[in-house]
Amino acid sequence: MPNFVKTLLAFLFCIASVSFSILVLSGTVMIWGGQFGGRDGLLANEMAFYASQGYRAGVFLKEIRPDKQVLLLADPGFQENDNIKQLAYALIEGYGSSDVLLDTIRLNENYEELPMPLYMAMSAADFDDAINKHPEAGIIVSTIGLPTELDKLELFKRENAPVLLLLGLPSGPVPGLVNLIQEGKIAAVVISNPEARYDVTAPKERLKAFDIRYMLVTKENLEEVRKHFAE
Image (cartoon, rainbow, N blue to C red; front, top):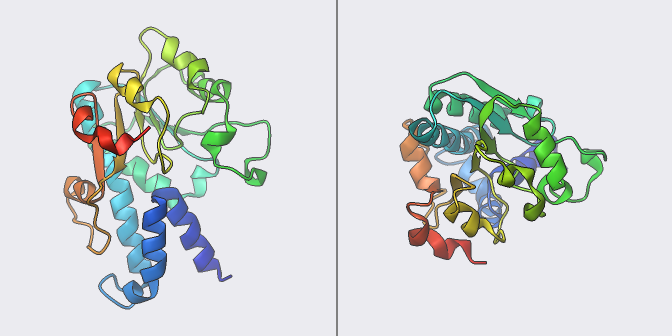
């Protein structure tokens, strides 16, 4: 398999739902020769949409918890991942502060050899350890979701816990997510816009790009979008 195709598959897995992956893969040849100016244009366009999540998250976090250190959790290998770098730059831009740290979850096993996504492989202790390494962080932005054993997370039992915002959730329902938002343990979650479009050029204005593809779910608008969290 050509290296580019492997890269594209990895890129799509990181940034999109299963339905989006199928759509893009099936239409790739047509798009490359069309409005996006080939494969590089397609990837740049998708990266712009993906990064818009960071900007929107930053704007939201600045409204509710300004001037705090932000910890952005990403998959292992984030240092070489342009998608995460662009997301981090957009987060800094939206939040208005460069006090943003990037880190990952440390597992006992080699992550590269695991036959499952990181959120399925990590334990509550793994997630807590990653956060506890950065006690000054007042905000946690996770691109890797949460561990499955939510009831064991120390983070949710702490007083004055950092604000938690989730990006890039796995496809399908996440048990307990609605309750965590209602209880304020999760400040916001970014989900795919059910009316998202994938045949348009990303606007330069990041908030407009965000609205085309995503939705920011908070306690305030949870009831409106609750149907998208079928549990």
